[in-house]
Length: 284
Image (tube, rainbow, N blue to C red; front, side, top):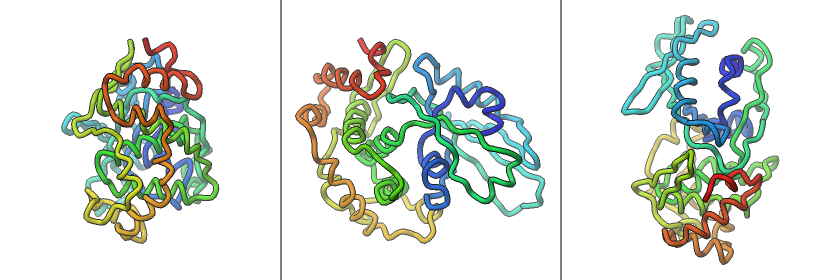
């Protein structure tokens, strides 16, 4: 991240996803995450062009004993890590690199949560341009509306349990409902496209009001990323208990929760009214 900042690339990005939650909110208390998920920071930025600049900055980079390469796998970019420390048993280490369309809320600058190992990194770490917590959480809610991934459920439960984390629930719920609608119907502006997602569905309040059981979860990766391993039945109950407010919809939210493409005008009005007004001039 510091190398990207020094190369002038980091300022074009907004950090998000599980890794961002760990680095700027949770520290060692959060789930370990290996993916690097970003949005382009500015509405005027092209995700394809920014992705090319990031890959160019990363590929072949050497920092101390570490070397970084960018690999393409199934049309997805991954960062591969190599070292000369003599660690031959670490396996094939890679991080998925994803750079998407800009966030709907203005990004915020966040410092790293201090960890003892940071003293070994060779100097101060740059503050990170980050997608706002409410939008990061809303994207996880929208994904859990489609699939039940344990890693997303774990992150959402952690956010609601952490005393020092302040989440605007009403804003998060509105963003989540809008993202569910866009996942199903798509959204385009003169400069950006949010394509429909194949398995997207209309917002299902019952998935938040009723506990999910272990059999409902779609992955088992959580066992590699948390210590101790969470009980999935308990995780599903906690998710429902802590997110009952996802069912407290306003009249406008009940409309867009239906997922009807004919309600695009209402969706546009709500998007234009979001904090910061970033999309006012983007939407016709």
